[in-house]
Image (cartoon, rainbow, N blue to C red; front, side, top):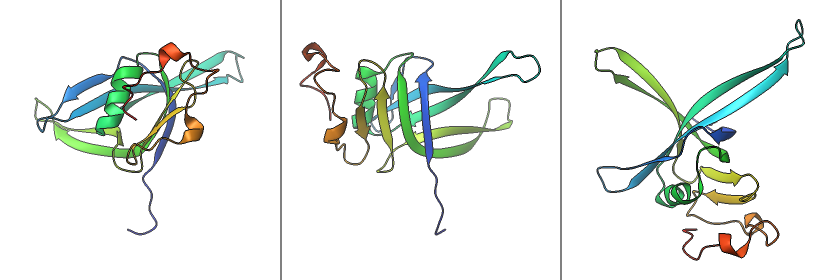
Length: 152
């Protein structure tokens, strides 16, 4: 259908360490649990309220999986651009269920690591090109944090 767009943008924190698994074809896949929160002040009580949404993120690109495995951990803040995908499955009791995930694969996906030590570190899924303006500057990252084996 012309004129449609499936794009999800999230800024959140990892609720757990990334889960890396090997698929049957030998490639790796990363699974993230990302929390996004909104806060507001209740008009009646004046009390501060917060609502947290949890998002399942699945990364199929080998380069991004390597970055996730090496640099991300529980509590890491990330910016993610991907596509939403809902799949239908039957559980062990024979009931049909649905699972919604954010998928990072192909050229429309982006993973940006946010936070103090890795601010401005951006990795895009489009042939793993690194935008030079997003490279860590010398004042943000010590030389001990730079690694010659970085996959991007």
